[in-house]
Length: 334
Image (cartoon, rainbow, N blue to C red; front, side):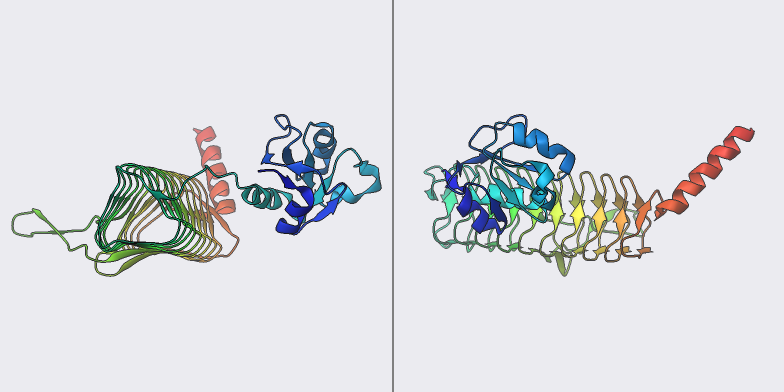
C-alpha cells in the first residue's frame, strides 16, 4: 500500500522537508532503491549518494538541514536517529507478509482453546487444551502450542516452533522458526551408591515479557521448581540456549551461539556477544558488555555499567589486552 510522505512523517514523528504528497510503499538500500522506496543515511558524507539515487525520499539526520547540503533533489524526513526512524517507517508501511486470519483446515485446535480476534492458525499447527491466544497473533505452519499455554496479542510464531505446556508469552513477541520454549532443564541427581543419574523434577514454567524477539533454533528451558523469566524487550539471536531458572532483564541483547547454564541472572541492558558461555549461578550486572567468546565462571559476578569485558575468565578489556601483550613479549624472549 502506498503512503504519502506527510502521513509517514506524522506516524514516525519526524520533520518533513519537501513535497508531502509524494507516495512511497517500501524501503531499500541506496543502490537498490526505486522511486517508491525510502532510504536512510546516518552519516553526512553519504547524503549526496542518497540524493542522487532513484529513491522517492531520504530519512536523514539534522545535518541535512545545512544550506550546503543542497537537498532540493528530493523530499527529506529529518530525524534525530535516522536508522530508528527508518525501522519505524518500515513498520508503518506494513512490510509484513499478507496473513489472512482464520484456522487452516489442516490445523488441530482443541475445543477448549481460546482464540482472540483475527488470529491466524496456519497449516498443520496444533493448539493444545486450554491454550489461550490473543488478538491478531499468527501461529506458523507446524507450530505446536502445548496445553495451558498463554500467548498475548500481536505475536508472531514462525513455522515449527514448539511451546511446552504452561509457558506464558506476553504481547508483541516474535519467535523464529525451530525454537523450543519451556522444555525441561538439564537437571540430574547422582546416586552416590551406583553412580547413576536420576532426573531432578522440572516442573516450573517459562515466562516471556512484552516485545521480546527470539531467533531461530534457540532453546529456553522452564524453571526446575520456579520460573525462568525473559523480561520486556530482550532480543535473543539464533542458536542461543538459556538454562532453567535464568532471569534475563529488560533490553538485554544476546548474540548467536551463546550458552547460559542454570540459575544465571542477567540484569537490564546487558549485551552478550556471540559464543559467550556463562556458568551456573553467575550474575551479570546492569549495563555490562561481554565480548564474543567471553566466559564467566560459575558463581562469579561481573559489574560495571558500560564496561566491556572479554576473554575467559572474563575481565575488563583493557586488562585483557595488557595480559595478551605481556604474553606476546614473553613468547618473543624464548
